[in-house]
Length: 528
Image (tube, rainbow, N blue to C red; front, top):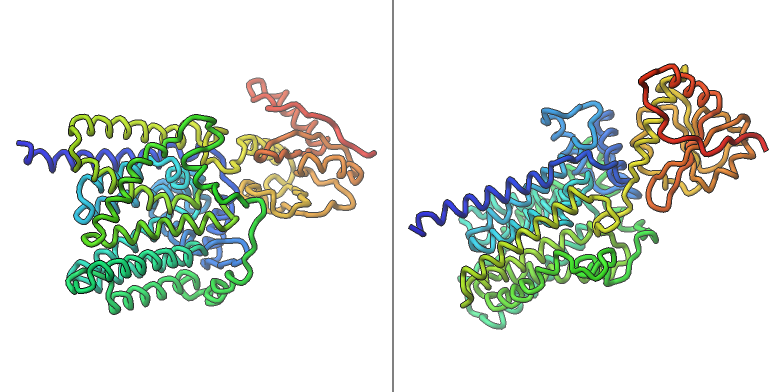
């Protein structure tokens, strides 16, 4: 009876993982404003929709693959506005790619084993870090999917009879990976280190084992050739912008580190296992430590039988080491190494299940830990996506920005030019105003300035609050200032020309049931 029910139980478990993982990724995607990086990607997609060409910029942006694929996705999305896609429509593409990652453990269950594949699926499904990027319109979800898919396909190419087909699939995946983010050389380098060290270790232990599966030169040739074709197609926007291929190579000679993202070498370890935001409380990832330790032991012990497992484990350690050395660090850079960490932990869980531990006790413990793990992901992604205790909330945009845009819409409605109302955005620090360009995208008469005009009489002026006094000397008329938050440490001053402010108040007084002003003016600015 147990044998008959086992496939049904495994199937039900996978249905629960895929269903729960989908809900955690797609539920209420519009609950928070766009992050600065999301706004950049959204406007690059808008440029692709308008011109039909994805133009790669080596100075500021990642590869074209996210915009090209999400453009096609929106064409098929039944609920998306193709001309003006909303935040949740754009994020749904990242949610889809994040959900597809869950199928990789399922596809690898024959080489991993049912227990390890199921454990890996649960860890990926409820990971707080993965959920954070899967619910954001950034490149990381697609980058991880392409990377792990390429690894899985190469593993199948070394074992399957259809080696060329799997090698081509791996090449396509890695070509898309290359054209998604500029960090692809680090990934391929670490994968090469893992494969090379594994090969050397196995040659020393079993130098005469011709039956051992491995990556042969023809397989590698097919994969590399297909990867080059895929990457060139994406960077050149299917041949419409050939200079994109040149720019993709130039990026490695003009790269500059952003001091604002510089972190100490132990940043990722503290992020996973000892976040300062949570005080003395252990993080959810701390539960994986015993399984990671046992997974490393199991991978090393079974290296001859499963060399790919050892190769992926070494590559993961190398990737963590390289990212720890490089000063530039953000929470989402840890997500790809975490996929490798979760893989090792899943191997460790399977090793525990094979030990002489009472099965009922072990299964009950794993069930409790799974519930805690999923609950942690739910808390991080759904309940408190931008709370100060959320380790993966990185420089979030304040909801106050949305209220500021709503106020601008009300001002534009009473201005003669309506949507063409002139707006001055004055930021001396250059592009520190993101994601404002996304939220002001419908106002085509917006000027983005890094210096103060000689005379200020524009209907609406947006500037950092510490610039308010400097602007006072150049004002040709009176303004009312409202304070609005952009992000932590960045307060904006929404300056509304006094005649428009008076007209707005009169229009509201004439509306009996109309909404009240969300914020009273903090002061009137005029000639000094």
